[in-house]
Length: 252
Image (cartoon, rainbow, N blue to C red):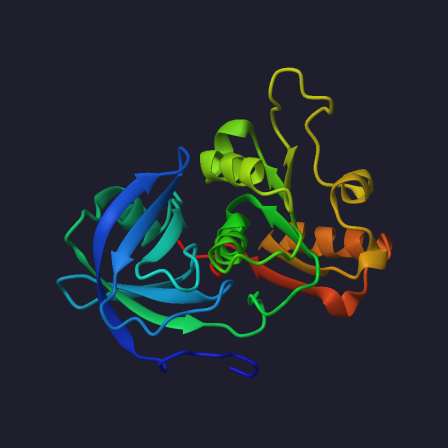
């Protein structure tokens, strides 16, 4: 794949599930011990392969949630009711189970600590996962690059990493997080439920004059809409990187 960076080559490795925790009603984080893991950049993803006793196999791609230099690999899986892979990973796989992993994959939608410019992150639903890897990598590297996250979710209960995000904002003046709720809002919230719009971009995002690098991740319609809003607000198209997923591209 043109423009793709793959550390260690496209080989399958066997990792061991060491922890599974629930993020939301439908999202679960899996922590894997992969002894020969070559390292990754924030924003990359891996392929996960499950093989049935009869030899049938299914492969899905999942973004990496862990910071770049973490010894263990973390994936956050959004469970799809009709999926082949995500229900097993979210509900059945148990600590001690082996999982086949291939990667890391991706070299364009990445953030590296050498970057010092402001960074605008925009997530739709489970699109938060690779952006969380960027937030964690920034903290790990003690980077002073200003970060802002605009996170669109259906409701407060659908926020992944809610406690961690709250703590990180409390501890770091250069990290800002704004939520946009599309179905239900917290009590006392100033705005009615609605999708991200031009007002949300104006109020929550860095000004175009600061020339931030923008990373947008989520379902395809969300990503297209958010990227268009950024451009309409005056952001340079060449400073907007997008990662999108659909019914099959985002893992199931």
